[in-house]
Image (cartoon, rainbow, N blue to C red):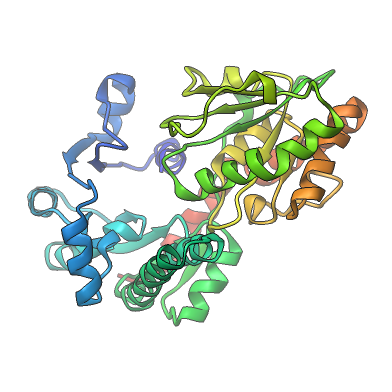
Length: 377
């Protein structure tokens, strides 16, 4: 949301932000600049989204999505009413499906255009997790959650005036679900003026960098560590895999005998991405677009990913990145780049140019604004 917010502000629009603060994603005002706080009048409401087994079972029996129920708060609803009673807006952006349950409150208290920005097609994520699960009970439960989310997504979408997706693939999926409102694809964008374009003269390790409180990332890294990495080490016994990202599960530990280093959360993403490594995106479930993929590739990191990992980026395998879905091909791609620094540099530079040419936030926001101007409240 920050990229869109900054884009709207740069075009001279007034922006007001109301955010959810949870135990996993707490709102930290102190890390924001005073300029950003003042320009967005940002406020936060705390929500307790901790998993409650009893509530989860109750929702399962009632056929309701527990994922959605957890994000409904009377405090948040009251804050919405308070803001809407004193301020008028032309457009209200609802970030993600999990806040879609407030749509009726928004309609009752505002005449603004209501736009849902879907970060993913949520039920597709859980369908993928269910497919990858080896446990019969867990597979059944995940499949049930996916079905409930699919039903909710198919019914709630048309309550809005427009739908914004991150990728064209997600837009097509929503249309198949029965979406009838205007839709527009608006990918994640960056301002590239401050991003290094220096060539990397060598690659000396492999890394994964991503938020580890997202199940597809956890599942993907488990596959990378257990299935892919032993194949790489068999070919290159000195190869090193670095795992970084916030909320790193205790199940991932440094094991130098296996060439694995876990560093967890980093102080600076830009500094971490300046290291001479090969970026991996090993996810097998999910939808939407990986922000870290754009950040890493825009910094010139040679990348090995599954097809889902770079969905929506328009990459060509062998030119912008190496794209492999089997453990043998994924490992072979990593070994190939580790042994061939020239190829790694060519892939990294080509990927960087592609991202810079196609994911400029200025262009993305201009296209989004033109779309928003055309929709009716």
